[in-house]
Structure formats: C-alpha cells, structure tokens
Image (cartoon, rainbow, N blue to C red):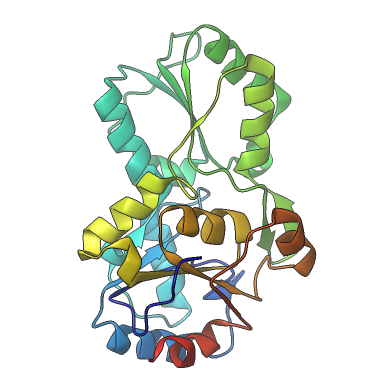
Length: 263
C-alpha cells in the first residue's frame, strides 16, 4: 500500500468521470478544483485517456463547462504516441483515430492505403470503427508493424451509458495477430512519469485521482503513486471487487478530495 501524502506536492486528476460526465460538471467540481489548486500550489496535471478528441477540444470543452485551466495542464496519450514513434524511428504509421484527434498526431508521417506501415496507432474511432478497418490493421501487424494503443481502457461512461473503449479493440488485434500492444496512455508507467516530470514531483509525494480502478488506480499504484478512487463516472462496486485492487482511499466525489488531502 502506498501511503497518502497530506498534503501532496502534486496532484494528477482524471477528467471524464471525475470533473464531469458528458457535458455536465459533477456537483462541487468547480469549487473542489479551486481548493485543490491552492492546496498544492498549482502543481496539477489533468491526465486523460480520451482519444476521441484533441487536447485543444478537451480544453475548450472544460472551459465551456466553467473550468479554469491552462492547456499545458492537460496530458493526453497522443503526445506520448508522437514521442514514442519519434524515438522508435517509425517512418510511416497507420492512424486508426478519429478526425478530431489528428491535429495532435500531425507530425507523424501517415501511411496511405496500401502503403507499408511501421506502426498502427489505435484510438477511439467511434461509429467509424468497422471490421474492415480492424482487418486492415491486423494485416499490417502480421507484416511486422508495431501496435500502439493510445490507451487500454475496457469501457467508459458516456452521457447515454457505458460504452466499449479502445482496450477492447486493442485486445482483439493482439489476440488475432499475436502482437502485444505498446500502451502509451494509462496505465502505462511512462504516462504517469511524464505527468510527474512536468510538475517536478516524485511518486511518493503525489496523488492520482480517477474513476477507473484499473487504469487510474491500478496504474497509479504500480507507478508508486497514492491513488484515490471516486464513486462517480464509471465507478462500480462490482468492478472494484473483480479487479482485486485496493485503492489508497475511496471518496464519493471530487468534492470530498480537499478534505481528504488537506492534512
């Protein structure tokens, strides 16, 4: 068990399911975020596994809901995918992502239809996902391409209810091709390390907060970060029991977090 620092030096907050669900802020989220900023002297990163929209679109959405933030506070898997492809020297990549995310991946040279690809970058395609697209990715993996999953969540909560997430489609490609995915979003240790490096904090003096017991809490704990689970968003008692993961703490919502971390 990782001890809970009170107060922490830095705070990592998941966005969807913690600050809001759909286009509706969760009760008390605005006030709690302001209190938390003061508590940690602004050493905050909003860490999201969202791959259906760009960082700019996420910032615009949050601002539209009344949250005050700087774009540099938002960390998404797309930035780590770009860095990974650059380090690996990938000359061409196949992008299986929605149009709204492409601006964050613009520096990656994209493989055209029928061209060889060094990697397949997999994100949320929404309704554009098809068996034909998955099969095209499968063939590239069989030919030697790396599978880069922007995240590995099984499901998430939309405004209309739970929906399958990128991890499910990644698992299908991994099973069919025998290629293990490189995951750049949560629960990747590198994702958490990048966030803490941005604010100059160590794992033992930081706290991660999320609604996903596996990606947020399990990933945070594996990185040595005290991790708090909120009972909002995709939270369910059954998921916690099935995961076999013991959060550092569980709170009803982000509104309870200042009191928990205030020392």
